[in-house]
Length: 323
Image 1 (cartoon, rainbow, N blue to C red):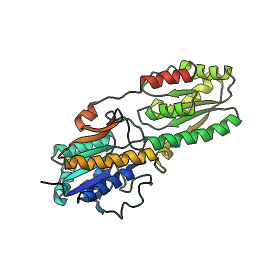
Image 2 (spheres, one colour):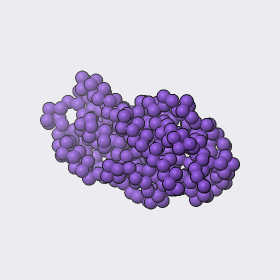
Image 3 (cartoon, helix red, strand yellow):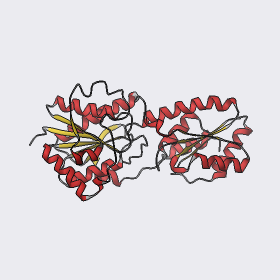
């Protein structure tokens, strides 16, 4: 039996480039003569049958838009067996031959639940945290990183004028990939990530002192939200060396904005491959990147993998910060 009708959804936190992925799924489906329906508000929309027919007009001029035109929501009901059965019933009632789910680990677990009930599913990684273990890159990371870098560059201009210490908190949940990347890009005095043990005196205070001895009067501390709040870090700095830091929490501004070219192109490639894998008869798969190439792995294997900060990044940071 061929693929005649598919659904596509975005779930979890939004990420720039999600719309580009949806657009690619729709255009690839149309190229193969497949009907495509957008499932609004993630798995909650699948439970309630909140679908809309997607065509060339509905996805026109969306490749450059941040957020997600399909909206996103978390569904407690879908975590239950009853909720999952409702979602599966919707798929069968509407005759969906497959579902493409765009999001992070939580989205993948939801897709696996659908697969366990006999629904064909393909996943596309999209999260600014870039913490999906089975792929080197997830949609939204490049845009979020560049947004944070631009904000910190602007912040440095004013902080240097007043010879101040800045403590900037970036997003990432319990992962420090975004903070490490941004910290290296802005030449931070110190970067704190949850993957690496923190000796506050060594990793923050001594680095500020070293910077001061080398003639610097402005100090930039980048903190991943999983390593503690910027306010707490700033308070400890003030208590330790009587320096009065200024705190900036970038927050959800990192999720918004026009996606970068890298995010648009990767999202387009991943959306295309997701449809192609369904046509090949594959299911329960995640589209991912490894060693510079696009590939796919089973959702079970993908969720079982672990990912850590690259050793080289830690070594480079140590060299760049002078300790």
